[in-house]
Image (tube, rainbow, N blue to C red; front, top):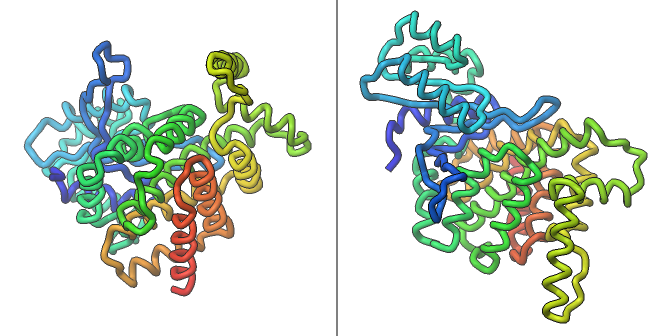
Length: 362
């Protein structure tokens, strides 16, 4: 059950209206725990991620509280949480009015304090579409359905946790892509394109990939020489994805040692679907600042799969998909790589193309 629902969905409406990708109740774990598994220490009520364009990817935490509490105490807590997960900014939304001194003190430590009433006015001024139903992402029932997927399909639970909690908190896009692909490999054979919940998981996987791509493409574009030959470009990208040449060479030697012990051909150590990855990445470099514009529409497509279809929301989604000439192309490229990196049925992409065609007629 989602707590403080009204406030959290106001935040989600604000995120959608302002181009942030929202993640509801994202778990925070301490990965350096000495126990057998990482400890869940808290959660972020809403984590909003602004995909990279010409500027780096940005994370904002939103803390929502309806119970009586000290505003400045919540601000101090939010500042600590933001520092812990390396977020760039923090908002705290309380049900009661916030003393001016608390707001000023919060601002000094990079935390914005709002009452619900003031947040509504702030969000409305940021984008007038805040006041109207704007996306399938804003539907509480769709989030409840998303949470139920892990219970109904236990094999998908860890992958969903990556998509909804740990993935959006990863600050290194190369590591993020490796983690996403490794998780994807573990659910091969577990998802069916005939099931709407599974199509939602597929699309959320594409969306998380595009988030990582938005930052990785931005980094590469700053140093990429378009005249570089494919062989050198591929070599540089390979080493970057694996954290440098030394790390890649270690993995290659381990692969060779394992192959020798089995009497097999070691081959070349690569990211799954490597040839497709290189092809997709070079295509994204043709319009590096537009990769991030695909993330919110892709998340909206995912939530549409687990929602009752609404014509007005379809029209708004169709507008997002037509925001620039690259949105549909880049979503298709992400889907192409996700399928290439796994043994997921190609029907997932066929279903996506069918949906995009339907929305194009809106």
